[in-house]
Image 1 (cartoon, rainbow, N blue to C red):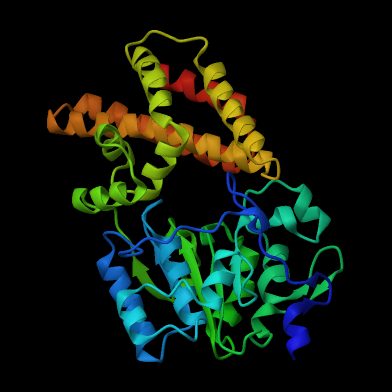
Image 2 (image 1 turned 90 degrees about the vertical axis):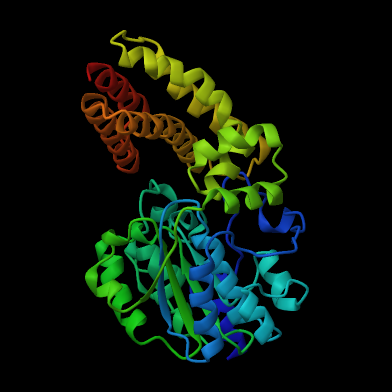
Length: 392
């Protein structure tokens, strides 16, 4: 049984997942720095609900962690995994919702090589043994990737995968599956997941992490316990800034930009998004005054391209496509923060016309985000955004 737990009929030895954009691969990653204090900030209710479930000894096997981007959902899922996988985790660790880091389990998770922790995201297609998945655009989590990494079965090219869900735990304790951006599971994948969510083997726990819970099928939602996450208040954000050692002079802008999402604040700080805002927002304001900026769309594309090149240069094993997606996200965050502030000012001033225009511009950002997910040409999508922004 131990041998089967470490191998797959089609894949060979278990491999650690590839690094995310901007990170080092697991084999080269520096040893993480673990801080004193809580793992989660400002999510006391969510952490308490998960701690109670684990402490009860009868934890439900399937969970949906839902809420805005960058507020700690994935962090919470990973902490649950640490607590569920580590036999050295005590009741005190569970109550504090912070697993030990100096155990064998903690070290394996830090190294990205724990065989009973399975992380599933659209980026895992880059490392798939299925050529069609490696070559396709990563716009969703297709059924074949789910079969390869979790539920098993025959995929489009005829390969057959056994099911990691139904293998015994390598260390004989528990198994944890985390599906990030679970709303990107295609309908076939969601339907194929239903039986596993309803009746997984004992000691198997599944966490669906999503910002768009409504995109999950009702039959998926009905089989899962749900935990809501919220944006953080100013006090919790200050604690995050202390943890990240962000200079005091940067915190005011970051607080406004991140709007209660520490993950967004960390991203903005790491990649210098204030410079993007300082350059772009006056140009968007010019559009809003009715003066067309012919070079703005090209500049937006240039910023995204330069960002992606810099990320890949810093880490040659990073995916250029994933780096481009992260660059687009940074762009959307920068413009979105401007629209959010415009909406707040218009609402405070009871300016119905300005509020209507700002809401429509928020719709343009949402449309652009959908077009990028649908693999529309980036330059064309940005040109359309600029044209419609000015037309309002």
